[in-house]
Length: 253
Image (cartoon, rainbow, N blue to C red; front, top):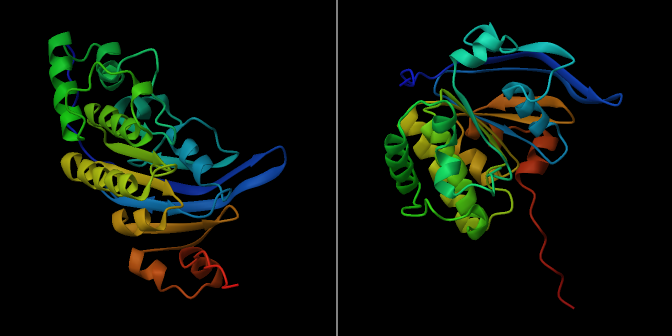
């Protein structure tokens, strides 16, 4: 029976990445570095290119130019993807509705025959309990709330023992309390595995609570990179407008 290699976080470097669709530039010369074990947040408004950038990093899209390096090796090299374990938590959770919760979580282990069925059952049960979903293995994903589905997606990432985890808008469509819970799970996952995490979000609270460093992206370009404190105190009007935006109360009649 094949076993998973020992977990080890990885460094990621993005160099001069560009991507366009139908002649419209979406990403314009994006460059940054993420250290091993770091939680790196890509924050910005809707339509700024955040999710496209994440899909380029994981290999779901190909860049027009530029490159992505994992441990100094081009990620477009198939050998790199087989050497380093990457997991992605999609915005929609992306659970297979034809499978039970437990089957979703253990799918990678089962398909690659990395563990025996009994071992997979034990790992799945333990991992679901870790994310607060004890004894839900036999449930259908359709029976779960949106927040619970996202925790199942995080559990699915955990069983891979990932070295790099990508999160695409992990708190979208969640109520404030569940958004806090998902933020806590992201921190716990990073602490348990030591994996490098790249988090795409427009959620300011999530970004400032989880990120070691934050890249502010706007109109396909990175405006600023720094610690959460440095981002919050950056005087750039575009950044300040985004991080301080509030709904004005109605005027009294």
